[in-house]
Amino acid sequence: MENAVLVLFFVLFAARFFWRYILERVNISHVKEHGKEIPPVFLQTIKQDTLNTMVDYTLEHSRLDSKENLTDDIITLIIVFIFLPAIVDSVAVLNVSFIMQALVFFGFFAVVGGTAGIPFDLYGTFVLEKKYGFSTITWRIWLADLFKSVIVSAILFSVVVCALMAFILYLPNSWWCWGWVFFTLFQIMMLWLYPVLIAPLFNKYEPIKDEELRNKIIALMEKAGLKTKGIFQVDEGKRSKHTNAYFTGIGKTKRIVLYDTLLASHSHEEILSILAHEIGHWKKKHILKQLVFMIAASLFLLYGIYLFVNWPPLYAAFGLPDAPMYAGLFLVSLYLGTAGFFLNPVGAAISRRYEREADFMAWQLTGTAAPMIDALRRLAKDNLANLHPHPWYVWFYYSHPPLVQRIEFLQALDYQNPDKEGR
Image (cartoon, rainbow, N blue to C red; front, top):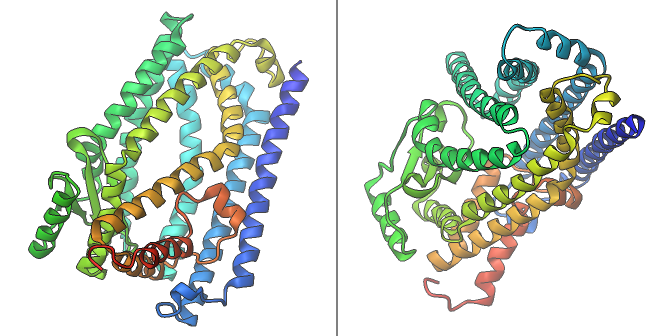
């Protein structure tokens, strides 16, 4: 039986490796093939030299991501099939409690994974992003971000691991249920606390300064039936010239955040259309829906882990016949992480649907698609977006519809409803 367990792992791991490789190659080939074609909806916005830069930026990022994924795969295989038994034995002989052993065990892998990602982050930030004029971050800010990220991650990581191990130790027959309750409360707490406690550790958040824009935002929010509290600008320009806006938080901490770079490069009408898109997420309760789905999925996931984590062939397959349960959790996580990769299209499809709903809401609130179309064109140009993603790549990875499709969708709304209020 242990041979079958091992074969299954290799099949899943190899399938993920080759499918990821195929998608990257197909996407790169598609971008190269169509890289000189300016989509009709961008003819008035994008020049050929800009499109060439967009293609180069897309290709370089893709190659960097491929190298990072390959490195992660190699490290995983080396650890699992060469060092894992020694790591388990070294931790098991420590003169500490079961909970502390688990914390050391999982902490080791967290440190290895985090350390392996640093060279890629450095290259991406200080070489690739600077090459294309995006990165504005200094070494001081980068090191400060790294330090604060490590501290925050270590605290949250320790809380989760210790809580789960305590449930396993003291409630061996029902730990999966109590773990689910804990994870549910923890997720809700993090959604609530992140905007007001964690995010401000890295950036300065303040209400929109532009008085005229603020008044327009108030009017838009009132039209949507929402209170005006919670519209912030963030000083992301100290790190990058990329532009963005996002919705975060729940309850009294929910807020819409606009990058200062976005405010500096877009007109009021474009900003309001982007804001209307974020309001669309708010009104459609997309974050709440995602949270409910995650809570429901985590219940089935934890129960499944409970059923398999004590299965002897799982341990025997990897040369760990007498390993403690935290080693079993690690092994199960390998399978889940690899198999979960193939579920990515489900989440991506749901997210793309939400984005289209938010675009439709933006059109309804502003009365016209024109400013949203202008905003998307500018975002594409300013962020050197890929205008020619392969359909397979979009289907598997994209959380947003491709920009060309979004613009065509918005244009169709105006075309089909020429008498819409505000036109």
